[in-house]
Image 1 (spheres, helix red, strand yellow):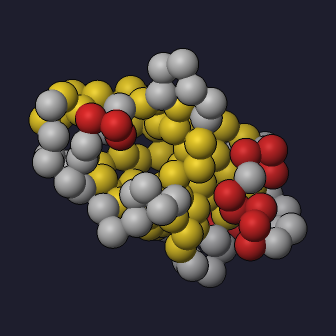
Image 2: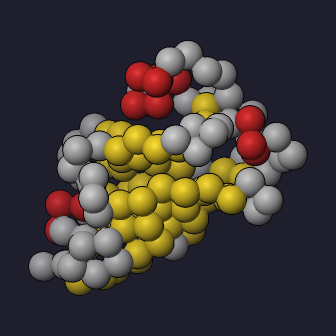
Image 3: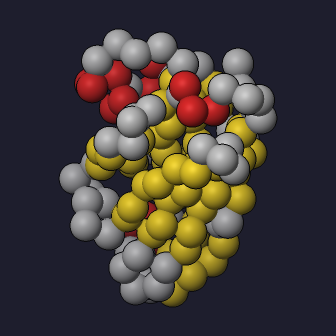
Length: 126
């Protein structure tokens, strides 16, 4: 398993931007698909975005056009650029790594991810 550490969360006004980072340990980062999930208070954790080993990207409909996921394999880091933030984006954001390839649908599936970070809080004020 890979160790993941998120950073970059914070408090921002609606319409603002934040960039989350997720640093991974180990020398096999490029072999993992990476995902971002979030959990709002009182709600289940939900898929936000994923990036495959070949850098194909996938997004939840709620963030499409506003969020961008990217990866830098040289830095063992995955990013989530969040623009035009809304109060409903308020949540704890988690980074996750998927070691095996199942299918494209697996990128959207929480249970297919092997390793998880501790989460970083994002709060968007109205």
